[in-house]
Length: 217
Length: 406
Image (cartoon, rainbow over the protein chains, first blue to last red):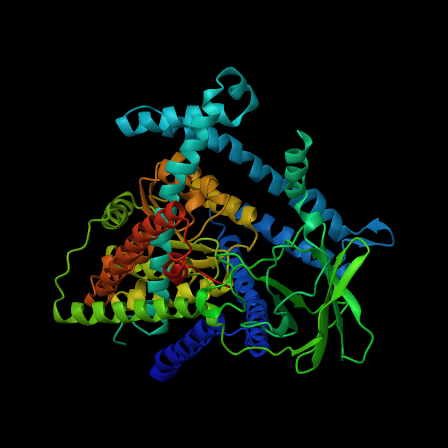
């Protein structure tokens, strides 16, 4: 059992990790074929894993409906929406258009999913405004610097701002290309080193908590 | 008399007219393109003072010297030079300043591996032209990209430094770690949730298990789940990826066992919502508004949903801790969360929370790596400046060592 839960996954991780590090340096078609094959495996595994996800979704909401916990109506709406979409999808063989016209499945997508997704995305504009208000309150020296920089950048990035205060364009470019880029690169260097270190720890079996349990189990 | 110098000057201005009739290119050769996947040839020939934009080069290729040749490329003769940065000095097919042309397989002229092809050049200017000799080359795939050997050496060196740091940490486990406020606050957030009797919401980001940030998020989840189990608080982990959900279920279960509370583990604490970005966001926002978790954790990689999630969480009054390597989302997290783990702090969290000497040792290895990069940045900047001032390419022999060649 320990072999299946611990040693075998670690061995697979090591072999695949080293294999794909080497793959990066091998331009031969054999190497390309290997990564294509593994990508297909991952797609197949993801397809099967979706059943796990669906089972989880059905189970969680079935329990809520059964126990009639507060807000169980939302779970019912989810069931109706999901089952309705699946029925429409199977009925129309997954096609959104048929015989020059829109299918029920296509209608559901265009007139429910797309507007709902658009609604969620549009809320972002309001959230940016409220977050910006909170960030730009000049409560400290750092927040004041942020406020001034933000005002300059906003002026420098819109035609009216550039027309009214022409120097903001140059200052904006300097802020973005020098200060902002320097900080981003510093963060990216740290992220890259951290990612390489974590990858090596996982490949070498030093970090194994993602398998669950303590390191010595 | 006054026209004599003018005519003399015009002779030079009209230089190309005095370049003479086209001559066959010197040193023309064809070779298999080095460090590639095959199905391409490379052509190399010497630069000439008579190269001008008026003078063109045509490339003619055939399956054999006896077969009919076909024109496969044409360009001005003063283009396609090997420039600094195109190839590393240890793997360059032609000297800098020479002409280089990669001839890949195309529909017009397919190139198969293992078959010799004949190639010749035509130098043309106006009605005058000159043919080169016919040369032959055979394409073949390569088993190693020598242009990336510097990259491999650095990876091996960094691996050595990491292993050395781990060995040093085993000998001397007392390594000081910089305080990370966001991770210190984990205990506080869980305690607050316990006192308020509200759940803890933990998100692992939008990535799959193939992303390092998601793995880091699952590792932190294990540490958080141990504390949650000890405090006997409710943990909710909604997922976008079923594989991540399966992994997290196992991690949380093992954490509860390790904390001595296997009875408190709930199978449905990890649950799948959907893979769709905004549907998932809407569902998690709904959970935040209905169940009002006292602590929200946002670990892993995020995209446009980051602000939608954290701003909603902030409106419910929850203590929020974020950790991401998505640099484009950092401003949103910093603005709306109480604590933010920036970039590499996300990867350091496992070592910081567990204080395992082996894991802490790798942080020191990372620091050596960063110190090395900083040294290279300073050295590279100085050398590039010296090279530009002295107008010399000698420095490129050092700079090439640190470049990423494909």
